[in-house]
Every structure is written in C-alpha cells, then in structure tokens.
Length: 420
Picture 1 (tube, helix red, strand yellow):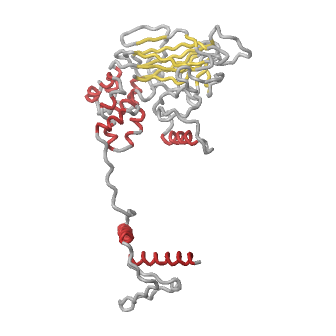
Picture 2 (cartoon, rainbow, N blue to C red):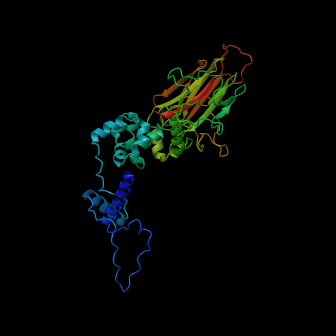
C-alpha cells in the first residue's frame, strides 16, 4: 500500500515539475475537474490559482530537454536534439577498392543508390576496365564524337547486360519456327522427362536464367517481392528456396525449355542488331560505329534430353549485312519489295561482311543439362544482322521406349546472344 502511494505521489510530482518548467501550473486531484477560469474582465487577467503541490526545482538535464522540446514544437520541428554531424566520406582510393570487388550487376543496380559520391565513383573508367572488353572501352572517344556522351554503366547495359535474343514463353513465342519434318517443337515448363535436372558443369539444379531482353523481364517491384519471398519463405516462418545472388537475385526454380520431336525440328530467330541498338537509345551513327568496331559476339544455349531418350542437336549462327526496311525481327513484311526470306545456313555464300558457323550433329547427355557456347572473335565490318538456328531430334542410336514420348528429342533453354 505504501508503495502504491509512493508511485502516485512520484507521478504527481513529475507532472508538476514538467508543467512548472513549461510555464504552467497544475491543480490537485480534487480540482482537476473544476470549471475553467472566467474570461478576462476589463483586460485584467485573473489571478492564477495556487498550486496544490510544492514547487520543486527541475534538474538541469530535464530543464534542457523540456526547453528543447518546447522550442522544437514552436518551430514545427520534431527534432529533440542537435543535428547529427555529416557522415564521413570514404577516401577515393578506398572507395575505388570497394567498388572493384563488386560485380557488374551490383555496380549498375545497387551502387548508384547509395549516395551521390558512390554514383559518381562507379562511372570512372578505372572501375569498369576490369568488366568491359578493351575494344569496347576504346570506343568511348569515337562515340563521343558521333553523339551524346555515353556512360560506362549504360554502355554495359546496352552491349553486355541485356540479351539480344527473345527467349520464348507460353504467352509470346518470338522465335520463327519452321518444321522440317515431324511434330515440331513444344514449350515445356517444367521440362518433361529430366528427373535429376542438374547441370553437368555447374551442378545447378536448373539452367541459370538468361539475361533479360529489354522490356520483357519482371519489374523492380516484382523482383523485390520475389527476393523477399525467396528469403523468408511463403508465409511459413522459415527460409525459402534461396537465391543464387547473381543477376539481381534469382530464385532457384525450374526453367522452361523448347522440346523437339523424333525427327529434325528447327527454330530460327533473326535479330536486327542495328535496330536493337537504336531501340536501346543509341543514335544511328553510334550504333553503326559499335557494330563496325570488331567486337566479340557470344552465342550460348543450354541443351539437354530426357532420361529415357538421347537427344541430338545442332546450332548455327550467321552474321550478314541484313536487308533494308526490316523490322525488329530482322526481316521485312514483303510489301515494300524487300527480301523477307530467312537465309538458309546450310547453303551459304561467304562475303567480307558475313560470318558463318554451323555445328554438326552433337549428342546431348541424358537426364541432365549442359552448356554450349560459341564466340565470334571479331565481328566483320559491315554486318548488321544475326540469324540463330537451333535444330534437334531424337538420336538414332537412342533406346526405344514404349510408349514413345511425342517430344523425345533435344531440349533448348536459356539462349543468349551478347557482345563480350
């Protein structure tokens, strides 16, 4: 009982101290419900009522805190103390060492969001010399003479950070499909017949997703939500599937693929590289200068086959000068008299502005994925278009199962075409 009375008295004393320092008084517990004081008569304020608690001098610390709070409230500020000193900046040499340890995707997507100093530092040539090819770095001065200035992060996104191939999806199949014979190709998500679903080289449970084509990848909000869902799980309170930490966070899940049938099936995609570079914001002069700079071009794709069938595949890449009046797919609509046919990679006429590569018949590894890559060391001067061909079927020496799956041939996933 004595303890409760002590707490009540201490609380009442604290209220009196606070109001005393703020310039006001308080009434006793019996007077708190009294009517307010009458208005001033004749301009003379009424005499203040006597406080029912003894006057107690506030400690210096409490007085300073209340004065700061009263001053801040009068000025409309929520600050209760002096402003914090500015954060110290890293020395330029130390900041450069920190940025050199970041990968390219982090330099482009994360570092500019830290502060203005980091955003300025990540544009320096010393940072990007280890990430961009020397022929591409050498084009900065020629590009400046042909158009507006081009920063190194933007140059990376245009040439190396985004895919030039439109990977197919169930909603939008951008590949031009031609069936030589058989039942053609099918979209499988997830791929059928691959039980282990493990890459033979990297050991991943699925082929890594390809670089996104501009405008086709998920938006920033969707990416953040996917990363948070992968980190904290689907509301279960535990951890999710995890992410690889590459290419902006990738949730480890099965990727879709193109599956071929028993006989040879072919898919072709025509890429107008000049149109693609201009679509990504480059003027025509700068786009032509980059294409004529002798840069390296890499084509990569993941191939696999079912556990009960061995697939056979072939890959072709053709670089040529293109045709006039072409659309984004690299061929015209035929109404303006231009050639709208897709070149045949098997019958090819070599010219100085062309490059030709055709892989013979190669066998896939059953029940797993493997990566195929081909790099053009130096693209010919004058080329403007790339034609990519993927062919697949069931290998003749593959065992015969009953019933035979309809799409028992080679499978293709995560195709990429980028400058390196």
